[in-house]
Length: 511
Image (tube, rainbow, N blue to C red; front, side, top):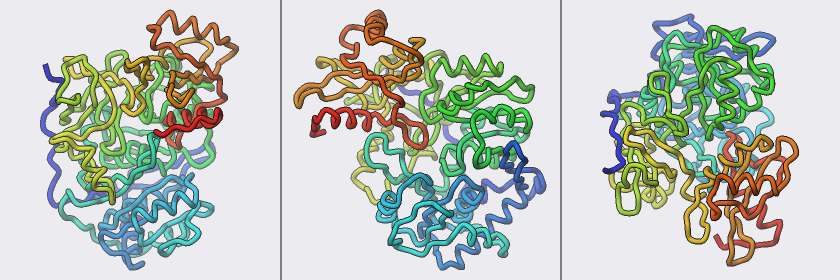
C-alpha cells in the first residue's frame, strides 16, 4: 500500500487576510492581559496585548514614513530584544516584507543577503553587524523604538497568498536559501495547537530561545498571541542553570527549547512544579537520554515536532496522541503527507523522501530569486523536504536522516542516525556524528566523530558498534572531538565536519 497519510483538509484561511492582524486579534478583547514577559531572576519587562498592538501599529506608521512601500523588503538586524517581534509584525501589518536574520551573522554574510533581497531599509541594533557599504538606509533600534508612539497604521488586508516574509534556511547542507512565505502561513500553525502543543488561552508558554530565532518567533511568540495566551521569554544574559527557577517563579505551563538547551538545563535539573504540563522540542532530533532525564526531573513528558523553514513543524507527538517510541510522531490534523521514491509512492515501512502537499497553507511560496531551485523542490502535488523517513500504517513517521547526508558502504545505503543512536547509547559518549569522508580521492569510509563523557578507548567503541550494527555499518574511523560543529539554532553541521576532516588530511573533494 502507498505510504500516504491524509489527516483531512487544512483549515481554510480567510480572504482577505493579514498575518499581523490575525496574531494581534485578541488585543481588543484581552486588553491589559499580559501578552509577553521578558523574564530574569531580577524581574520582568511586561507587555500587555493592548500595549503590544499599539507599538506594532505605531511602528508600522513609522516605517511608511521612512518611505517604504508595500512589497519592499526590510532587513532585520536586531538582537534578543522585544524590538524583534514588534518590527516583524509592524512590517507585516502594512505589507512590507520583513527579512529576520540571526544577530550572529558577519558583515560579509549580511552583505550576501542584501544582494539576494535588495532591502529598502535595515533596522539594526547596537553592535550587530551590517554591511560596510549598506545598499539602503539603516535605522537604529533606538530610533525604531521612538516610532511606537506614532498614530496607529491601518492593516493591509488582501490575498492571503501574497508574499509576507522571507526567512533563511540554516544552510546545513550548503548555502542558506531565502524562503518566501505567504500571509496564510500563520493560519497553518493552528494545526499545531492540538497536534503538538495542546495550547489554550490560559497557557503561559516559556521559550528558551532568543527572540531572533524563527523557532522562538513562531512557537514562543506568534502562536501564544494567536491563541490569547502569555509568552515568557528569558531576557538577555539568563543562563540555562537559571531556567528551572524561572519556570517555577512565573508559573510556566509549557516549556519550549532545542535539545541542546535541554541538555544544558539538565545539568542543574529543575524541580517539579504543579503548573508545568509538558515540554516542547524542535530544531534537531531529541536524544532519548535527554527526554528521560527531563521526565525524571520534572515528572512531565516532552513532545517533539519535526519541520523545516519551508513548512515549519507539521509532524509531531502531542498530549492527545504521543509519538510511538523511536518515531517523530504523526502528521497533524489537516496535513496531507506522503513518502516518495524515484517512481512515486513507496510502501508502508519502506524508506523514502518525506513530502507535504503543496495545498498545505504552511508550505512556502518560493525561494526568493531562485526559480529553478524552487521548481526542483516540487513534484506535482508534493513539496519534497529532502528528509528520509519511513511511514507505519498508522501514519507514525520514523526519521532516517537527510537525503544529502546518506552514506554509502560498499554500495549499500547507510543512515547516519542508525549509527549515532548506537554510539550515543554508550555511557561514555555525550554525542556523536556519523559522516562519510574521503580517505583517498577515490575512496570513502564511514567516520564517527564523538564527544566523550568520560574516558573511552577506541577498541571499546569498536566492540560496542560491532555488537549492535552490521559489519558494513560500523565506522572505520573514530575521532574524538571537543564539540560537534553546530549552527546558531543547534543543528549539526555535517558538511562542515566532513570538510574540516578532509582539509586536515589535505584531501580535496570534487563534491
